[in-house]
Image (cartoon, rainbow, N blue to C red; front, side, top):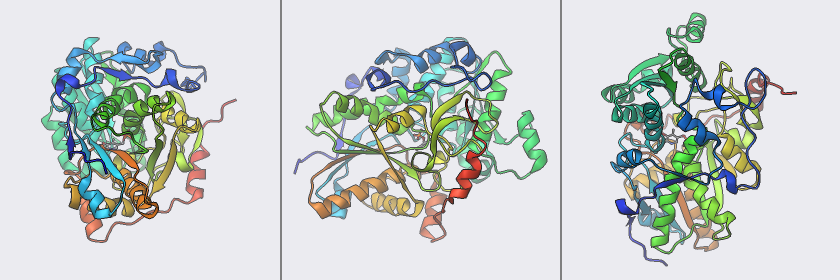
Length: 454
Ligand SMILES: *Cc1c(COP(=O)(O)O)cnc(C)c1O
């Protein structure tokens, strides 16, 4: 047995100073996004009303490494490098010979990995004179991360929060407001699309896809405003690779390489951020971890969705992206992991999966919360509902090692804490939490609206 400490730290001086772009190392590049009208590949000019050039360049870059600007590193240092923990107590509780490591991103101001990208996104917009960012938020994690980031650069921030979560998560809204953001319930009266949905149903509970449509519509209407997306896009995954780059250095300090890497996938950003630097090492023949995505059984875009071009939003305003999708009109059941309730999967993660470089499994939420309880009672940290999926998968793997006697090294990301998600734990502890079946008919109905490209 390797005797590693509980916390494996990096000093500030050891923090990586470049993000890693996996695309040039893949056997083939991912298919390009297409214009929703012409179905031709989108160019920088098509994206300019939405994003600043600094981010558009990162979206399409062929460079393997992108230097992190000094002003971004300065903000990262508020919480980075983040700790890597060896889960000694969880291992003991499970009686497994496996060694479990988790990279903890809950130490950020917003409590998740999302500030790794909200900070550079605010920075590049600010550098080009943009004064305001709009966005959507489901669980409230991304909205609070962007509110924190815009506050660092003195920018305005306007957030469309999915109505169901706006009502159920007033504390997330307060967090966004205390960092200076304005928060609207979505659908809202502020956009034509929102008004049309409210006219049909004044109690509309909203969805991420709808909130994206609203935030995009508001951004394109104002030349000083741009839109920010918290997951899915290449530049977001690029920024998140700081997680995996740090984890590589930390594991090297204790002489370990992972045999299995698991991450929860909503839009794919914390997973890609952890996995891609390890995938680089794997493609270079330096290690050979199994890389596994874990998604909720109620929103299984990789394991049950189709790989084809679809919209990123419900109204069909975004470019068409080739991705695993359940259909842009798909509204998942109200599972507690709000950050995993997205109909599509990042085109880059989808492509990596199609290329056979990653596997995927889906797990129901009750097994996830059972795992989270075991984790909290041993390691102490209360996980956000999303990474309970990664924890449940790590526990499955560790228990398989107990059966087989294999001493595998398991690595995962604990991408956020659950201090503002205690209602979901209450639901689990009281026995009220249910698992949802996802009938094929529901998927087929949503897929019927996905455009057919000729
Ligand atoms: C947003 C969020 C997710 C899902 O997004 P990914 O892009 O798949 O990482 C997962 N976990 C937490 C804590 C989140 O805030």
